[in-house]
Amino acid sequence: MLLIISNSNWQRRTDRIAPNGDLRVVSSDLPCAGWRGTSSWQMVGQSVNAQGQVDYTLRGDATPTFTLTRRILAGDQVGLEFQPTAGNATWLTAFTALDFQTGHTTSCTQTGGGALSAGLGGLFITEDLSGETMQRQFEAGGLIPAPERCSVFTTWTHIPWLVTDIRDTAPRPWPTSAPHGRLQGSDSFTEVGDGTTDTTTSAWNLTGFASP
Image (cartoon, rainbow, N blue to C red; front, side):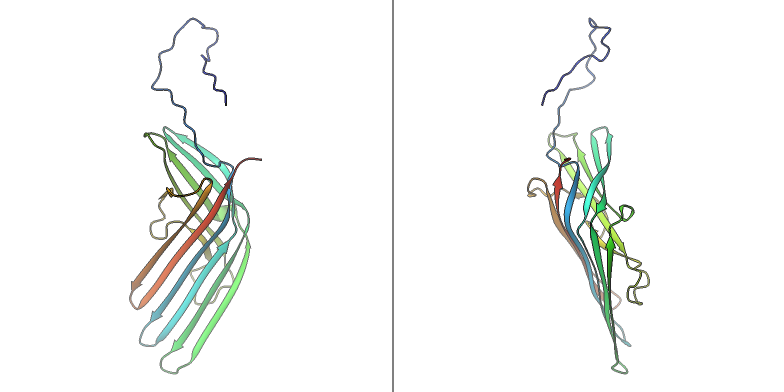
């Protein structure tokens, strides 16, 4: 790599321009073209009341390819925005309901899938260059339409296949132990309340790639 620093006003060759702050050269080992790999999201729960018990599972799995669509530079903050441009996802909804009064059991399992849509997912990586060491964060998510899901899941018109922060949808620090060019991790959260207990988990394993 060859860096050439010169005066852009070439007609004033003898003038000296006062420096505007310290000159810094910053490098990053982050693959900038895109990321590909696997991801999953799952919610498993149980709801119990005086009438009966319902056990349910919702799941989404994907093989996404995220491609760089935008670069953002604001002061010492660098942002890289990626969208899914290839890959597929599958979804599952399942439940079993037991009526305590009659002992009757009702169950349903529906599955489906399709190609990933850029409008229903994204990966955003930021790098803060203001300190002595680079601070890197990321957040990502993705959805797949589920038009033929089990009827009890009326609000779940789309099933996630990736959520990097289940509780707050906030950026996460880049894992310090991550191998070069890899983004691996998981998140899990259990919620209890009003006779319902459910555990939501998400996992991702992505490998970066450079421009061809």
